[in-house]
Image 1 (tube, rainbow, N blue to C red):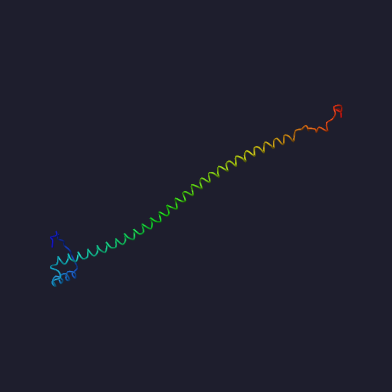
Image 2: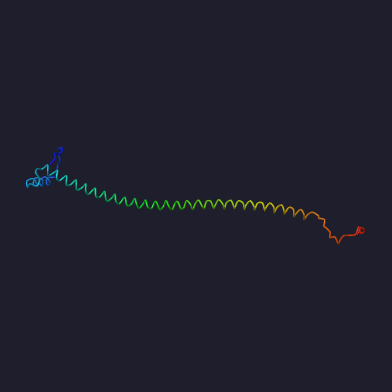
Length: 148
């Protein structure tokens, strides 16, 4: 076995674990107490790390799936918003065109109202003033009947 740097630690363990470790060393399962503790720690840490790594990997896969779903939904929403923006632009252009038509209509109504007022004034003027009737040629008086 390759030489690995080691450090000394002091650990307090329950008496039952100590008794089990001493029993395992006496049975020959471990060469000494240090190798028993190191083997147990490696086994526990590797198992925990493997389990944590697997749990993290599963969580990452779930999150990636959620991200892909949300990205797809966002793309659909962006597409819908682009369609709505185009529709909004078209409607704004239509609205502006209609506003111009309404403005022209209002101007025409104002012009016609002024013309009607002018014609009313003229009609009133002609009704109040005496008008010389144009006589028909057959009903003309003869020149010598001017006294009649």
